[in-house]
Image (cartoon, rainbow, N blue to C red; front, side, top):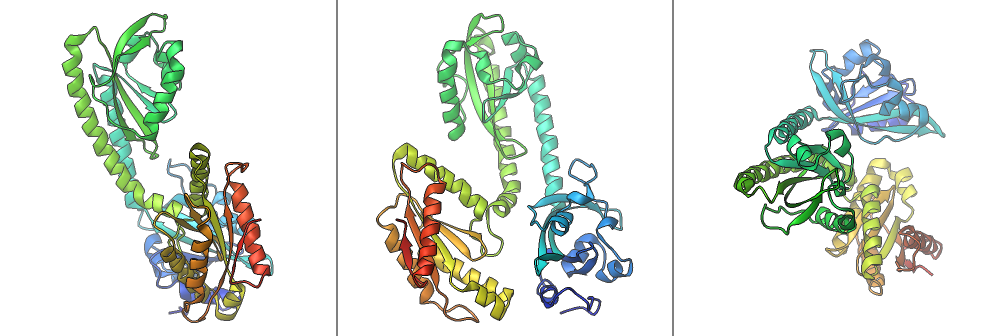
Length: 458
């Protein structure tokens, strides 16, 4: 229900409508005018910030009154806040993590997003949405402390050990490894692991390392072939390598290697025991990090309104599919979709009804797609479907989607139609954008041909 405290001189009726729509949201949502003053805060925002909307109004709360900090504890520049960028530059921000101290002295961490509101081409207000991620940040910091203890354990281990990133750069070594190969630590950090191999073996090892990064598996000591290592002075030694893997704090792959000089057989059993303990610890840390990052990964790759994949997720998948086609020759198809006369829906029924129509169409597209297809919302009323390993059959699938939408009845507005542009990728395409651009042009031809139809790329 709209509160009495809401200002009556808001920039437009749309702002009043927006205030009403955010009251029941679980996310914190606040409205600001073009000067950065609070126009409205929903109950969730009041709870997260520990401030009532009435209190914010009474104290003329505005953007400069907050003292935000970054995750490292440093001050977050006011002009770089999502709200500041929305008001000053009219841009929609990415999710940003910001810390803030509540009136009772508690530090609250929030994942913040800002969206400008335009009226006659000018930014007249902005809406800021956020959620409380304090517990998630605390859990991540706890895991970081665990990783630091893991680093200390590696440092103290009697076995030669190193940790490398997915690109093969060395990020951690211990004294045992440095003694074994005759390098100082500073000479190894940041170098490719191939520095520890004779030059004639390095190119082949790069291929093996890339294969491991694509499908990491644990390899116990004694289960792999012998390798030839090379010390700093150029002398060689036969070594055996045990491999494990884990996720770093940023979710990236990290490879843990234990290296044994085969001449020291009497130490092998001790190293295997350490490797088993290390494998268990790595698996435990990996499972914990995966659980914590699951929510963040979903939000980063999915559209918050429809639940479909978002533009960023689609771009990544399209690039992968293009590279797979170049490697295997298996073609794929793209169907670009636009809701016909969607502006009339927004203008005639309001944006809330427009959102209902978007979700309605998104659900039908997802239901009409095959299990292997990739459905995404690019933005506004535009969708895209990637059809892997598909060429001639793409037209049938596109027609199925068009028919399913045209035969349905959307809430409030009734009949809705879509225009579809279809293109099949080719190994001769310059890049992944070639087929996408062709589908886009075909979609506009479908619009020109009367809408509610499928047009194929020429």
